[in-house]
Image (cartoon, rainbow, N blue to C red; front, side, top):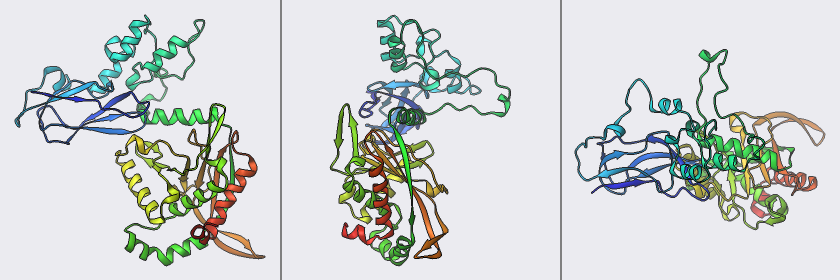
Length: 404
């Protein structure tokens, strides 16, 4: 008896995914919990694992296709030997023509490439899909595309960014065209939404890193030996941010309709660059964690983010974000807030500069820091004071230990 491979629940508000890659071929032996296929959503990439041992009997959905929660991707059969593959699902018809290329060559509005939910929506509302451009994988129509078309004024087509090639290009032979992943599309949407919705301003300050660097140099070996993790800058800045958030609760708030929601908990998002794009896993209850706990958690979240192993619950619900562009050499930047959060703290490169201290010109390791904030919630006085509070805590790290 065959066991179906089904698209699992994808998380809150996520109903559709794209089959990114099959990790097994038809006929391959499969053990319990073996990863079978990777699904890409607009938030994370996740693996679907085998619930039974046997062999991969059938692949029903090819790479690049859109699937919804509960859809059957294939099946696992009993046995240990190779199973003959169905003619359609076993392999591409021609090795010279990749599956993705075949799919892309079809018009996005072709009913053969609509998911069941989209097809039902089209049929129920008698939508003419000819000429419609899709925002899904390989230009396929999504439920959002159809709903947008239904809600658009009849006198004019819905305005949207082009999602199909613009036509012949003069230097096409010297260009490479790669379709944006769901994650990259989602990042683009959220960043643009943030700019369109929030009143974003950025304020800057600079921090003398001398005391932090001296503290790390003195205790880094003992810290790593005891806790099994390196003492980095991030834990100091997370702690400093939490302390400042307690003093200026508006920076930890969000707008919900006509209400301001002040949060008395501190779930700090830490921006991580991955091959697939920027993700922001969350350190929960950072105010209750030690320096070692924060360093361990950031290290673990960062590694799993780069490996595509994060769960959706680890990427949602943050109250404030810290991002460190300094690891790539950025000297100064204006980070964009992560809605519905009201603020994001940007760290940058540590660089030795001449500064005046007590009337004397001295060389100190300095870092520019930035706070981008939603001016609808946070006033200028609060934003500047928040950043000064962070600066004071970093320049005098004993404040973090004494909570003063």
